[in-house]
Image (tube, rainbow, N blue to C red; front, side, top):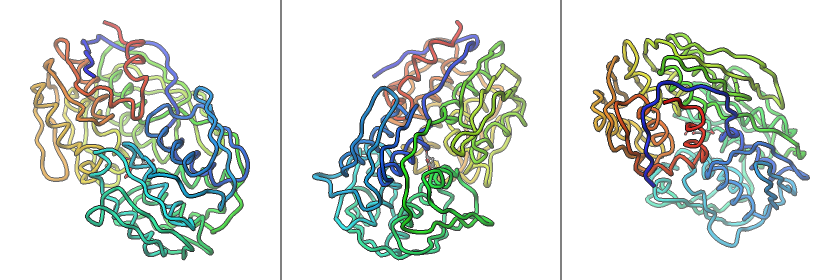
Length: 427
Ligand code: S3P
């Protein structure tokens, strides 16, 4: 699908964003191995989280959908059964990596694959720890989906992932649910902690000490009724656009504000964005609140080291904001960006070039000078949801109507994105 975006003067109004993608995956997977019926409200509408629902359903957990409310019937840690066909993770790295942890501990063999983009994403990062726990996994060329997982009895391990990855951490902790004894993940750089928070909510024993997260195996998990907070990574597109367009005033309601994700807000505020946080409350271990953002002169800045890991999903849209900022943006240590839904360094650079925006790519990072003008152009998501939405934000600040090819990719995390943007944009 092609989508046309015309320039906007500012964004105004008030929005509630769809449920957080990361939290939705975790709640659904944990609910499928808990005992009883969990009701998950404000579950993500994104295709990725629907892939997770389809997969747990194919594994025998009954799933009832009622709008954005989802009920999942779990039959306990040993309640899943062999799927009739290959599990389909679609475009979702989270689904395949997280669910593999559960599949590794099953008494049956299963296969899980996905679309063309997913089939190019590295899985050796989860295959290694799962093999160390005793699972046998086959993959294309030893590391790409589809995966065939022969599970069984797992041994607990202590594992230090070589990269900062919440998906790898989650995979190991999920496998640890099914192993006898204590499984630990050592994190050099802290990543989002939704798995730890959610597992505790469902009744698992989780211990966290100096970056070591430990889970006691074989807990009895109890079904829960939970509401998924709004997705902060989806909010990022609106925070960046409203900051960039003077005269904006936009309120985002009920956004997830996990301290493991809010480096984004701190970094934006430290560099000139004006964001007010109100009505902050804690529910089921997760903080939520309202964010009001007003247009402001943004200075730009540097994203490097642990900050790169903390902002990894937001970098495409921060690159757009960086090009419009006073001093520009430099991103370093971002090799993980090259193995997302697309090589995001390459797809950002390609779209910037089409808009006449200068970008200097160097290895695992890039620099964008500030005070640049965006020229209307035909852009391309290359099938990547965050690139589609970042292109739309760039188009808002451009000098005419832009076209986004493969714009439908946004539905992977945010199917309502274009309609939502239309609601708040002022021409
Ligand atoms: C996610 C972790 C991150 C992130 C992805 C969601 C999660 O991936 O990019 O969108 O929910 O755990 P990595 O673990 O590969 O960094």
